[in-house]
Length: 106
Image 1 (cartoon, one colour):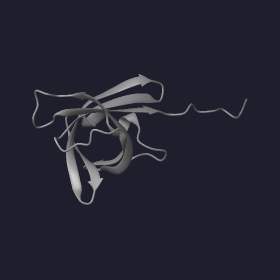
Image 2 (tube, one colour):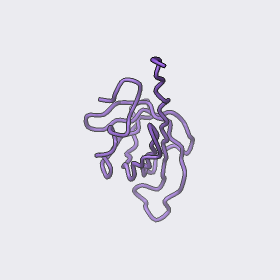
Image 3 (spheres, one colour):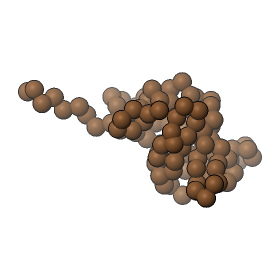
Image 4 (cartoon, one colour):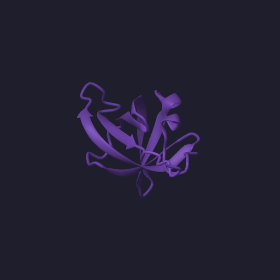
């Protein structure tokens, strides 16, 4: 399960190297593997996935799931082909930026 307000770094940090499923609708699914989970600053992190051959080449919000995770809508951007990997020929990136916490006591 993910935290209220959307996925957090902790939802992915221990899942590098594990499989996810990208749900396309109509019962069609595409396998993904999380290859990187990188902290980019306070509340910000990025993910890289390698994707199976039926993966869409369009950036969009896709539902992703894994054991104990999701389905969760995540905005994925195809960033690079992987020509030497017929099983996972495309790479996606997802970037998350949590809004800063506002301290209303000041």
